[in-house]
Image (cartoon, rainbow, N blue to C red; front, top):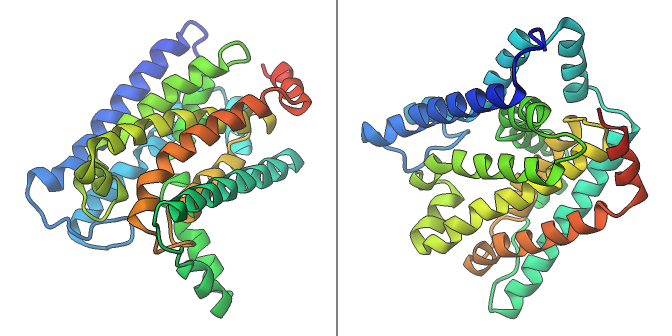
Length: 289
């Protein structure tokens, strides 16, 4: 950083507090003002969605601002290179991420079927099969509805401040808890799956926050094996949003919705235990600054 005397811990705390407060200010405003939020989402284009979208973009916006203000010129260049320029390790990490999400989807649906759940609809995949150009539509919305709006902040700037080779687990848990709590406003928007979880069983809402923690362990392992690249994490986040609980497999049963977080928690932990014992991870961790 420009000021070597600045504590990374203090900077991280300031970033988290500002991000949480501003996000909640924007996303709770439509709720407090009793706007119509029945259909509000990133792509709903109603008045409430303005507040919803701005709030959702703040982790990345603030992450970029903190980087521009605090980092030296060469570190700014390195930051955006890690976020935007892929390499061979990034491509490998993307394929590992996709494989994990497909396994989580398969296991969740298998258990769902065993408990009376219906078949997945795969509407998104059917649309792409009918018109391959729809792939770019889903790619666009998949990247902006979470990955690009959040990860410059969480896995970019905040990981720089919090995670090093000696504290990957601790740093990941901290970021995961913050990330889970940051989603709080979504439990008040009926068009969001978090709303369904909170209004069917509060344990599912708690489970979502725990899932954010285990997700964070996975995200950090991808961060490590790609040599601190944020680029593959954009895709991991997108795969979760549009494959595991999104348009690619929609519609999915209520049983699937109930099971997806507990299954993800277990498989995230299994994945982290396995990947951290590989030579790929150990060598990458040793190479971290």
